[in-house]
Image (cartoon, rainbow, N blue to C red; front, side):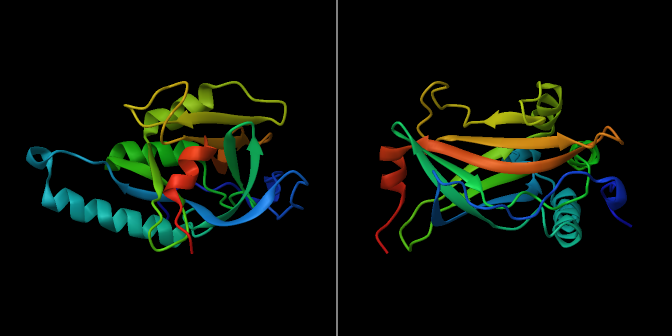
Length: 201
């Protein structure tokens, strides 16, 4: 039995096929990846049996939704002194965001959002997406492309100039069902900080 509710493919009007790379972007060897994990807790709150159940649910989620929980190639453009990375291909999952929120709440899970830099000494960037972040995304207004987005930052980062960058998780609404599907995960970070996190390889 699937953990997530799926939309019928026949009514899915959102294209998830590869599109041509925009002229202002360049290819990279970096990737972005979503991963379901147990919500981090302190030592005194940790329950081994609960953690085993959470691990099993996360493994099944990744098995059921390989197009959602896999590394995605990203392209990059520079805007001012900021590097902006975006997925070359949108998520291909037909699971609904609404069902993902329900499962994350009931199983105490979060999504780990990873920006993976190539190179032996490179450092990756990681943000956490909670159920309430997904709920906020669905409440946010659509942009001109009918996409809803939520910003993800580290709690102790400067809101206006985050040292560790900002991730943008987005979703689109199916016009017939009214449910949402995750669309893409993008990442912005200052060029100078980005360079220090890469290694020469």
